[in-house]
Length: 444
Figure 1 (cartoon, rainbow, N blue to C red):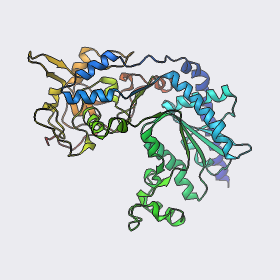
Figure 2 (figure 1 turned 135 degrees about the vertical axis):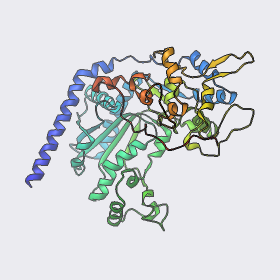
Figure 3 (figure 1 turned 120 degrees about the vertical axis):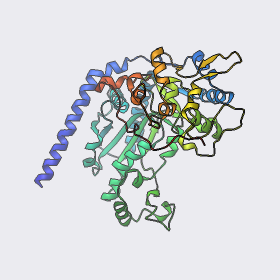
Figure 4 (figure 1 turned 90 degrees about the horizontal axis):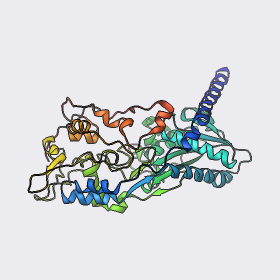
């Protein structure tokens, strides 16, 4: 009993500590956040057209133009206004339906330095401005001890859900699996986004909690044995119930609200053009080309290097498979896997006309308000093997003229993630992407 009392006392102190840090950040930074410039990073139409026309073939130009029609720019002023919408939706629509006379509202925040932390500060600002109940503020590690409290109502806010994968993992780890293990009702959990892709909205309609929470197979077996409500029809293969346990899916039991829904890029472009855009422009599948005044996300979320660098496209997207080959011998487009880097180097500077004029096709950013790359930087980066530049992975032997993680440094991205510097000093984000690969470059 004494140990439990001490543990609970420590949790309460930790909550108070985080609440104190949050409130100090709020008092110090909220007016600066509200006053940050808005609308200063719009697409420059002339530079965009130059980027499109610089592509090496008509096929590439067609795909670049199709992609450019669906660029979504969300200004800082829009973020602030949509945070007000999130507060109104939570307090006037969701909270009253919970039927609690005196609910404990808990704002579930990201770590300092994440964009979701900034959104939480804006959420808190609108709560105060509109006169709603002020929430307790906490981070994920302080959550479990409150999951059993039926009087708690949790709010989770963020700027954007691109694929829904991160949210699925959060809901699985912190809400769904603990409820199954403890055999208690799901917590009252509301999730609010400034914006969300249609793809993410559809993705998180159902959740595979046991796969996404990374619990062991034995734990899954015990959960299934203790919870007969996990019906066999929720498993793709009834015959292989335990072997296929990661395929158990449930309807998302929580309310997910987005102030703005971004249409699916695949639906807008069509399957063929969508896949071609990834073969040419992004090493990982992303269903949007979206950026904010306060950040541009990573390549798994959006077409980051297009927005930041305007690079010449890739030809070796891993997910595309062997079915995408060179369309015909006259097109200067290789759909093959991992063509030799000597071929890719020719893509960067090429001769389009009879006069043997060389056209620079790389490092043509088209977003306003960003620093123009100097010639020395462009020359150095242009020497990095293209597969490494595009994917951030090591596919060939160095040395390289610049460290490969230079492209992941938040300081060179534009729009710049100013909130990182505000809270934690900015710098390079930690990543696991720069590991030596044993894949050999080859011609298909």
